Length: 456
Image (cartoon, rainbow, N blue to C red):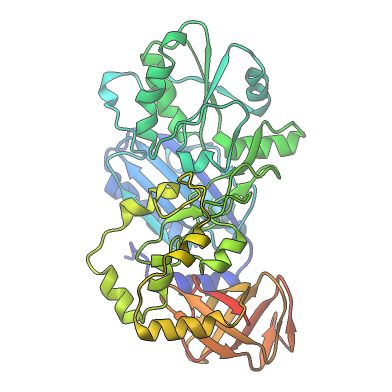
């Protein structure tokens, strides 16, 4: 009986590309689950057969799921939910933008809680929730001068998109925002509408009950969160009072709701709302980086990390050994390495020039050689076919031609240079690949999804 993944992410990605369209979705339900472990195992067996992937948390209080399901299996997937009384007819929040690679594994974990809220559920009635509002009703109440709207997401989520006029707490976690909002709004419990929202609704489900327990009389929440709101305004032709991007916790890191860019690159301050993870696997910090800084900083958050990705793989592994970087990853945009984010007037690249980092002689020679060549970002790695020694890449910018010299750069791959030989574009032999094309050609080393390719 298979209860765990047997395929790697890379192997799964290959199978996904060979199959049809997938749907990215989420759902949650608070319910009393007597045996979460058995429930978890039952779900894994059913969903694994349907090639359903995702990250799911199960606890005695319910289930919280973000998933990717083959479009052809969506009805069969719904049927697996209908087997449980508390999941019958449940709303599935279907994403606005889809990415077949949003999830590459099926991970179902048993936790103490499906959301870390820090609350003692025994002290208040968690079923006494706020009034659910659809998109039209939510727009209307936002226009009421007696409304206070609160974003119950974290600072890195609201930074790239939020509702107009919303209070956006500068917090790292949901549990931090609860006492802060309670204290800030303590004088408005009787006469104001406390209106709240989050990504998919699950955080507000508990928060609305908590605030009613704290004495707030008029408590409302956006049904289905921003995901469902975006779907409804599109279907009904409503005005979007949400501006920017909705941050999501999968490979996409965000789906665009409006064209507004309300955030800035954390390294230079240019308008940008693209979240990335630092290319140094020993760091992996999540931050906002524009294309220009991505090219100059080799997709890294700091000069230290740039130096690290140039080290041999063995040295990188030694540096990572025994180091837990989970907390640093979730500092998000608050790392001191992000100079613009720290309100520093000085440009990070001027600072780099004035304070060169000490590196080994070998590394200096390698970097001086690379510095004489202008590198243009053109795409990213997708798969590596080991037996044939062929790499597959997605071209996102510029053109790639047979005979071009390129660099393949990644946290594990390092910095590899090669000349493009015979090339297949979208499965057909060709000498030129353009933006949007999938290309394959011989690569004498393993490439990975985290790799970027640059043309000289």
